[in-house]
Amino acid sequence: MLGLSIRAAGVNGPRARAHWRPRAPHVGGVDGRGGGGGRCTRYALGAFDDGDSDGGRGARAERLRALALGSACAGAAVVAADRAVLPAIRIVYVWILISPVLAAYALELASARARRLPAAERARRLGRLHARLAPRVLAVINCVQGGYVKVGQVFSNRRDVLPPAYVSELSTLQDRVTPRPWRQVRRTIERSLRAPLAAHFSNVDAEPIGCASVAQVHRATLASTRELVVIKVQHARARRLFAIDLANIELLAKLVLPPLAPVVSEIRSRQATEFDFAREARSLDTIGASMRARFGESRLVVPRPIGALSSERVLVMQYLPGPTLAAQLAADVRGAVGERVFARWSAAARGDADDGPALRAVDRVRIAAAAPHLWRIRRVVRARLLLLGAAHGEQIFVDGRFNGDPHGGNVLVTTRGRLGLIDYGQVRELTVEQRANLCRLVLALSDPHASAAHVASLFRAMGFRSRDGSEELAARLARIMYDADEACGRPPSAVLRELAGLDAIQSFPLEYVMAARVSLLLRGLGLAFGVRVQTARLWRPYAERGLRQVVMAQAQGQGAPSNPLR
Image 1 (cartoon, one colour):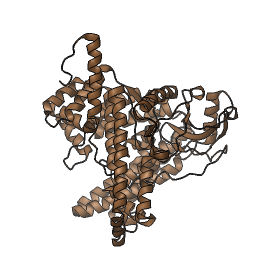
Image 2 (cartoon, one colour):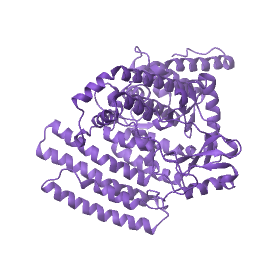
Image 3 (spheres, helix red, strand yellow):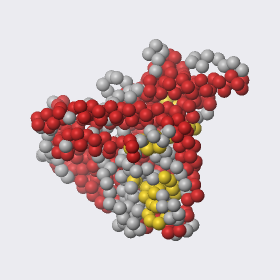
Image 4 (cartoon, one colour):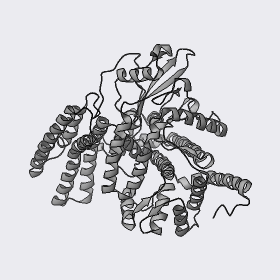
């Protein structure tokens, strides 16, 4: 239901604007640029401070807290002594910050087993622990930033993987990461322009309108034309921090979910393209022209870059006003049921109603009365998701050039209800052969009569390799990556662990991985809005058209082609 989709919405409210005024510096984490680490450490270590504790459990918690506090102090001393932030120091620091959260979960699970609590009571206590610890995990991510923000963004769209409390907290990472101080940002812009700001802009908002893992965005006005634009400014030392963090995340994947390790490894090897804003400007030009030709500007809009003012670390482009897709949904639902009912409904959907007023009978009556309005909202949301899926289908299968990072913070609802597609830092290009292979796989996945052996053979033709060549692993993983999660009542993480026991993944080309990421993120958005999305079925028309294009090109250049659907 739509009610279960509002738990992470409403995170992008209006912000006050400041012009040319530096903000109080707060650069979280171990990047050698400012403070925040101490506050983050104290907050993370507070994982044991509140909640239930009794008897021996409380004593164990105190001992663990003391141990973690001592370790954190030692780590902070090392970091203070070495502002260069060696990779090993950053990794140790991250684990120190997160260890109290992990220990709190270990204590809760051990206590539940020792007391032989019934399943319902275990679930209730675990839900309360999620609600208490999720903000602390978010604080750690905001503190260390770097690649951890990128991972948090991806998981904030996977409500079928993470508990609702974590999805709600991590959703703020889409565009509300702790920003860098204005003095630092202004210096980066002026170095890029090789001129003072006043030479090109009549004003620039010192308060960013968005901040994510790689960069933050400031609204500005061009001095020459008075046009509203945005300036995307890359964080200092972002490239190095990402390299360190993705190495750490790859290690974690090998320990927890081995099937994901090769994927993380390939993403890590190609991450550098996201730090080249000159390349992103060219991608905006190319993809924007394609989207305007296919959909017009009445339904979709991609911002136009201003190449003369852009560089590798600074990108100036057209300003698209409007909230994110999630924030717009929250506003629509809030208007339908009222502020107080919306707040209680959101709390119930997040699973933290124990900490506040539960959904009352009168609230349910109000929601029922608003059912026609909510039904219309759901229809609009579904139409927007189908349009978003169509845009990515065109990019992947017809153009062979697509945005590999379409998370919720990169989709806006602009004036007149148009969808604004932003952030093209992870654009990937498919060769003609890769595009044909992916088209054939998606057509097979959308065909109810296609056998698992056929799907597996197409997946292997794309370059997928496993240690023992398991047909079951190839067929099931292909469907999870490009169509839908298995309808088995288990979260994808459990399914992936099962698949890891079947065989070991050895390799898979990165371009296909990024296309799969688009599928996963679209499905995650669908779940967020209570709409089930099967990407293979949604993409079938575009796969058919893309394959016809490939076949026609082969026929013109190499004679008659073989059966394209085989």
